[in-house]
View 1 (spheres, helix red, strand yellow):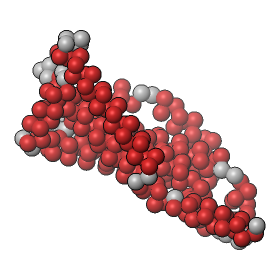
View 2 (cartoon, rainbow, N blue to C red; view 1 turned 135 degrees about the horizontal axis):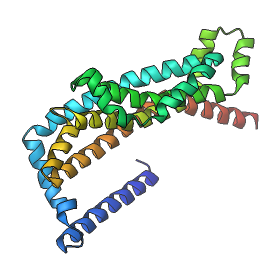
View 3 (cartoon, rainbow, N blue to C red; view 1 turned 90 degrees about the vertical axis):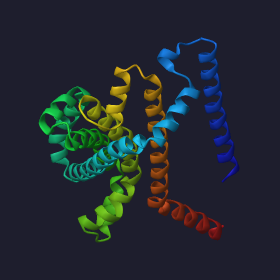
View 4 (cartoon, rainbow, N blue to C red; view 1 turned 90 degrees about the horizontal axis):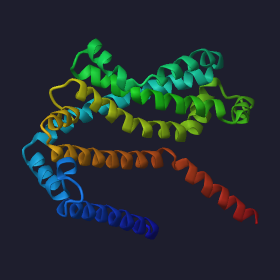
Length: 266
């Protein structure tokens, strides 16, 4: 680990620990009501009980399965349709305003409609998670293509590359950072979609658990679910960082090649 990364991690850990100490002190000295905020010691105890009882794995597996399935299908649809409309400009001009208008409708308000269409089972949660993922990935992909430098495409055509070769070897590598940015946004959106779907109607999952705990004023269980979701988000983002570094490793190689050529020329 680099020294700068170590310092950043120490600072982050200090901020988190300081926040927890302040929260515990605020609860201990009655600065805030534990009825609304609970306290870290109670949340940790509840997390231990939640984990040891097996409930955590049960609800986590359901929510993550819904979120990841929605993320997968939403990302695939967003990338493919974004590439299609980016390549066929006239189609993009026709359909992009329509997709933008649909995106402007708060999807959470339509969650009851989706549950009415698909039921309270797995399908409605996946559809909502996938739809919320789709918009971010689509706009990232589409905007990446329409704003990329046209001389790259023209140069590939002059060198005899077909449209397919240009797409694979020029367009996709250039758009990859944008696509990953869209998927990164979709990570949170897919979780929100799955949880909201469960909140509206389900028999298990974190959304159901939060709704159940809230109805019984069990704030420590609500906080436990929030902590778990924060940890899931951190792990998912860390995984996406590794994927991004792997997919964009050619950037580092290109930079090194340019530096070596510059040194040799000098």
